[in-house]
Amino acid sequence: MTHSFRLFKELIFRLSPKELFLFKKKLEMNIESSDRNKNKSKKLLKIVLNNPMITKVDVERKLYGSPQKISFDKLIDRTVEKIDEILLNFTRDVTSLYSERNYYYFYLKRKLLVIQMRFLRGVEFDIDTQFEKIISSANKFEHYDIMIEALHAKQRNYVLKNMRAVNQIQKLIVRYEEIGRKVQTTRNIWTRLSVQISRNASSINYMKELTVGRKLLREYFEQTASNTIGYYYYLVEMDYEQIKGNYKEAEIYIKKLLSLIINNESLYTPTKHGEVLINLANNKIFQQDFNSAIQNAIDGKNYFNSVNYYVATEVEFLARYYNGEINFAERLIAEMYNFCRSNGGPFLYSKYGYLFACIKTNRGEIEKSNELLLEVKEIEKDKGGWNLGKRILMIINGIESSDYEAVESKVLNLEKFLKRISKASYVRKRDKIILRILLKLINENFDFKKVYKLRKKHFDLLEGSDPEYGWKIKSPELIVFHEWFKGKMKEKSQQEISI
Image 1 (cartoon, rainbow, N blue to C red):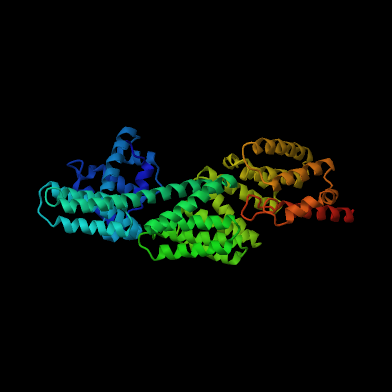
Image 2 (spheres, one colour):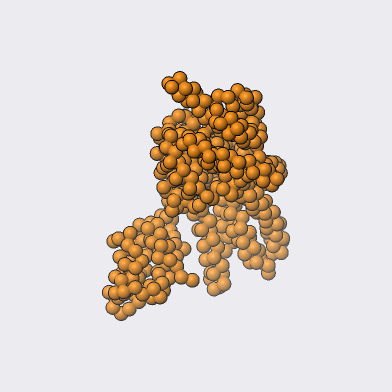
């Protein structure tokens, strides 16, 4: 299989200094020609290190005089294989590149392979002690797959020597296979829930699965005392309490989670640490403690890079937006949107485009908001969430730019859309009331003051605390509809006075 030039560059610039040194030495020992100057791998490395932005075509010309796709692809394959050999033979000095848990996963895998190779070659050594070290470390870091493999290998060593030991090991294998299955089931449950969270899935379906998963994970945690299961169990409990609106209770589980990962090597990774801080920031947003949310988000970002950094930045963006820091929020969303244009995937790019459009509408830059909305496509798949938010924002933009004919068409399309999706998925009563208000606004020739009086009961519901009708923080409704409407009503009144 042909490796890409991009992969080669990614690998080269992520090697530690010692790994890069070892890689250069390896190339010296793998001369592809009697003429050292014709060692293409060496020359390839030198060219790329001297100019990280160089293109594939330019490298081919420097190596061969003209583009030579087949020869170049074979060279890349050979060179990447040599890099992989360096990665597999990592030493203790590269632990800064991995979490302690991940380092031991790779280390123990390699150690187990080496012991089995020695055994098959008939080399005399204390195999029991070596297996016990692997089993102990694997148990500490909850690498149950490695632990079970080591137990099987140790058991084979006793088959002709001690049947009692064989049986004792078998009991351990059965026990840890059961724990391993429960850990894997736990991960699968959380993965399914996470997909629904990221897509803002139907609350009814999600709550059913969350309730079932919560009960099962609590049982697993009590039965196994596994830190890994505990980690996901606390996440599920946190999410459950947040959905119920119990944010103080949710914070209790978040702090348990933080303590769990900080105090257990079997769990700790910088990414997990950052994620817990971001969860804490999110919870502070729900509590409308925006200053604390901002600080927790900033702290959490220190543990991330690349796409995850911008997912964390989204939390800071929301906290600053709700805190009235519109200028700061706009700088953040512009940075997030531009990064995800080529690096974040279509859903994040589309989502950030929508959030950026909300900021532009907030600023009165309607034309720019509409331009951004043209790029917002992927979130349309979330019918009752982000798609609905986009449709309402486009109607608001139309009213702001006095394009009433287009507004009427969009409102009627929204009516058809809500009827259609109501058959397949849940639609909040708030959204249905917003539609009724918009239809009345059209019928009353966009007389905001008159519509507000005629639909006062509807506005009371929108401004109330009933979860079916009230505004939800961290929802796609970044521009709060009833507040925007009242603002337009005052604006129209002021215009009448000035006339």
